[in-house]
Structures are given as structure tokens and as C-alpha cells.
Length: 169
Image 1 (cartoon, one colour):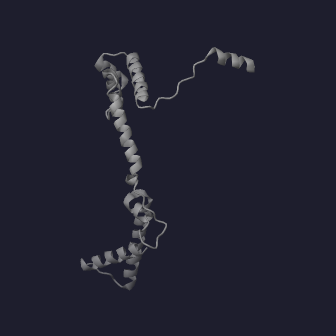
Image 2: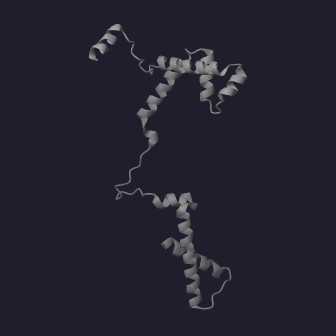
Image 3: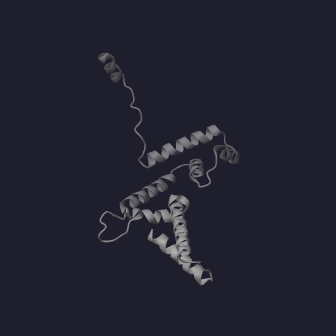
């Protein structure tokens, strides 16, 4: 409110310095009230979303010694997470060298910022969509195996396990 009031007063002072005049004290009071209300409305609109910066400033906490509730978290300072991610990228890059040329091409097309659609890739390289699907599937599975991230498969059924299941029935 103080900011709105001081802004309104400054506008009136600027008006007078520019050669403007007021008829009497009542005129000055009415002009000040009108400008004050206008500044309040401007501020409400700014806080309502027309000015994201102003809304952020209004909801921001000050970083003073007596404000114990404000805790600043630097997400970039999570060193352990960054190191783990970099190590995983190195591991994937090394494992990708073990893939075939076709597998690397398919995965690269899927990861590229300007990702090609399956149809575009197939028309450029003369592949069928079935070949693209199978190469992609095999590349992901092989990369998962090479990086140690493959899921355990379905257990193999043996005759003994089938007999044990029959005995339980």
C-alpha cells in the first residue's frame, strides 16, 4: 500500500512540475485518491498474473537472519546425483559401441532432438516398419543387457515344477 501511495504522490508532483495546476485542496485530495486507487488496481492486476515477476516478488521470502523458515536449496549442488548420472551416461556410451550399426542408427534417431518418425526413418533407409520395430526392440534389449539393467525373464518351467503344481491341486 505504501508503494501505491508513494507512486500516486510522485505522479501528482510530476504533474505540477510539468505545469499542471489544481483548483484547491479538495481537487488535490480527489486527484490523489483517484491515482491511489488506480495504483492499487494496477498492483492487483500485476499480482493476478499480468506481471509474473511482480507476483514472484510478492511471494518471495527475504533472506535475513531472523527469517528461519527460508531455506535456499541449490538443486545443482546435488553432487552425488550428478556423478551417478554422468557415470550412467559413460556406461551407456561404452555399451553403445557394442551395438550394430543399424541398432545405433535406430536408437540415435529416437533420441535426437529432431526425432524422426518411424515412417520417415524407414523411407530414408529403405526399411520396412517391421524391421525398424525389431531392430529397435533388439537394440534396447541388448543395451539393457550390456549396461546390467535387463529385467529378469520369466522362469523356465521344468517338469518338477509342473508336477509340484499338480500335487498342490
